[in-house]
Image 1: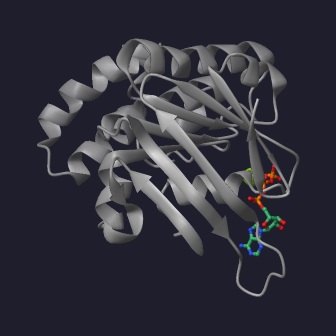
Image 2 (image 1 turned 135 degrees about the horizontal axis):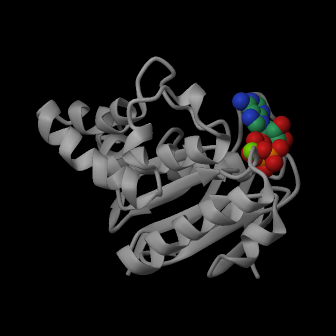
Amino acid sequence: MSVIRLDNVSYTYRGAETPAVNSVSCEFEAGQMYAIIGPSGSGKSTLLSMLAGLDLPTEGDVLFGEERLRDMDLDRYRREDVAMIFQAFHLFPLMTVLENVCYPMELCGMHPKEAKERARPLLESVGIRQEKHGRFPANLSGGEQQRVAIARSLASGAKTLLADEPTGNLDAANTVNVIRILGQLAHEQGYCVIVVTHDPEVAELADQVYRVKDGALTAS
Ligand SMILES: Nc1ncnc2c1ncn2[C@@H]1O[C@H](COP(=O)(O)OP(=O)(O)OP(=O)(O)O)[C@@H](O)[C@H]1O
Ligand SMILES: [Mg+2]
C-alpha cells in the first residue's frame, strides 16, 4: 500500500494564471527512493510542499495512508509523519550538532537525557563521530552538515523523508555519500524517501524517477 498518494492534485498560486502543479496523480511506497526531476520552475518544490503538508492542493487530494491531508491535523503530520531535508541544510546555528538532533525529540516531550542517548547512535549511523557532536554546524563541512540534517530528520520518528535538492551544495563525493545514506534508509529500514533533484546522477540511484514538466508529471 502506498504511504503517500496524490490524487489528481493541482496547485495554483494566488493571482497566477496557470497552475504550478497540474492534475498530478502518483503513489509513493515505503522502502523505495524516488527522484523528482524537471527544469527550473516546473513545479517540483510546489509538489514537495504539498507532500510536506505545508500547502494543501487547490484541487485534488494528498492522501497519507487512507486519510486525506485536508482532514488531518497538519501540525501533527508535519511534526511526526514527514521530515524535510533542504539544500541549505537549515541546521540551528546556535545549537551544537547533538542539540540539533535532540531538538525534534525534545519537541515531542522526550526527556533531554533520553534524547541525547538516542541522538548519538543516529549521528554515528550517518558517519558523524562523537568528537564532532559538540561542534556548532558552522564548524563542519557541507557534507557533514547535511548528514547531521539527515540524522535530525530521523530523530522525529517520521518514516517519510522529503528532500529538496539535498545535494545542491555538495561536491560529487559528498553527493554520492548522502544519496547512498538516503537509499540505505529506504532499502534497509523501510523509509519512503522522495528527493527533488537537478542531478541526473542522483536520479540514477533512485528506484523510480518522476519527471515534472510545466506542472505535469510522468513516470520514467
Ligand atoms: N510563492 C509563489 N508565488 C507565486 N508563484 C510561485 C511561488 N513559488 C513558485 N511559484 C511559481 O510556480 C512555478 C513552480 O515553481 P517551483 O518552485 O515549484 O519550481 P521548481 O521546479 O521547484 O524550480 P527550481 O528547480 O528552480 O527550484 C514557477 O512558475 C514559479 O514561478
Ligand atoms: Mg525548487
